[in-house]
Image (cartoon, rainbow, N blue to C red):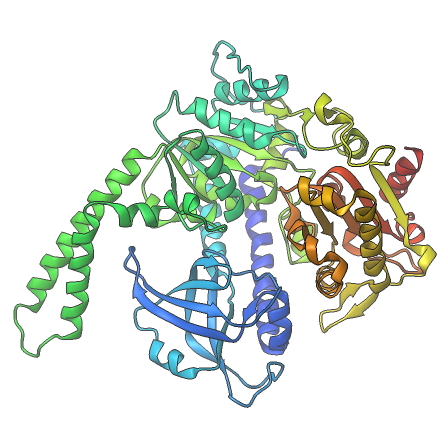
Length: 627
């Protein structure tokens, strides 16, 4: 059924508004009712903090450095671009005191987060002295108005577009009968790519409007995308590369830098290392030969403002002269940085940055496109004349808080829409290089029509001889039950968590410590429930057996493992109840991510009676039993 593109987008806008209001309400309710300790546990608040130094950064923003003092194993959610609020507690208050939190009246933005050190940019008039004297202060994530503002703006622009490239792309993506146009080039051979990867790169080069690279787990989507970008740069001077998350932008940027491409990363990386920082806009700006002069001028401007004398008639003239000189230098530095860069890389929302104002690109690449809201994708599409999307709509969907918005279809991504309306522009990558074939086969059959094959070199990979690569351990035998904990009713299954670690210990004993250490056999423990993740982390810390192996173990939610892989993966499903309720485990795309992280060994722990009532899990259990 074809829907008028403008009506469809207006509906998107309405759903986005529902989501916006829902998230804002939730945020305000939580801010008022949720105890601070709970926010800290969730990684949404940090307390107590130590005040570092404050200074003006290279972009002339007032920046404040703070350090987390609590010795926590909680991973916090503070990353570049997220808005934050500062608060102080009365000296004698406990952290769960709800009435005692006093908020400062300004909002900051995370500029940089490196473990326990976080840099926040704040307004010039922020009362930093007050904050410094507060002593007992912390910060928490604030509601992110900016991203929504950018998405609404982008949708409005797309809805209003008439007779231009944006209007053409909008109509094309929504109208099945409209054919996407192509260039005709001779096929190029890439000896280091497999057949479907080579085909995908050629399809990208031939696309005049749009192309989709559909990459199931382990099929080398990033490798293919990097190659496609590299080849596109043989024909174009500069491309824009975006992704939903900072992490995904980092990952592709790093790979492009490895290919010798000059990347300019707008925004700061999530994993802070010298290599990553080296290609950020901020570092490049600071390293420019004209920067010391610009810094000196900005310093003079600030000093003049502070020491302005009454009746100084020449103040404005001097000020205007200095400002004009500073602007001139800034424009010159930017022109050089953007002139040299072949790839501009940023998140979808950051593509609205003032630095990219007025810039146009022949080609836009969107990685992890199946994880982004459609509205977010339209932000950079406004700057481009053709769009290449890469991702996998059978893995993690975008996160949506409002059930009403979700049922209305807000979770349908632009990539899904194009795959549905334009199957001819999609290339499926079919050769996977990650998993033992027994682990991969179920996912291939269920999600990819059995089209994904295992590369010969990984087909039979394993750790122990005569070992089953894929196991299901039924927790009904130990009478493990799920229970609720905390105010937001996190689900936890303590007996299952203990069994998970007992099974892992037994497996480690079979392999032997020496071999685990020599070969650095790494393990990921996944649970869909955050409460279970934290309980498992707590148990590992407590058990002396795991002490030597801690650097090889990571415990996280499914979302936390997106895009990653480990030699051994264990999944604790948690759900065990009489009614056969499995909650959001019904989202099978999430499960597809979980079961495709393991290279050599996958162990799922779950209650067969509860899980087996759902057709997907029943099929999965039968598949494992037949291996």
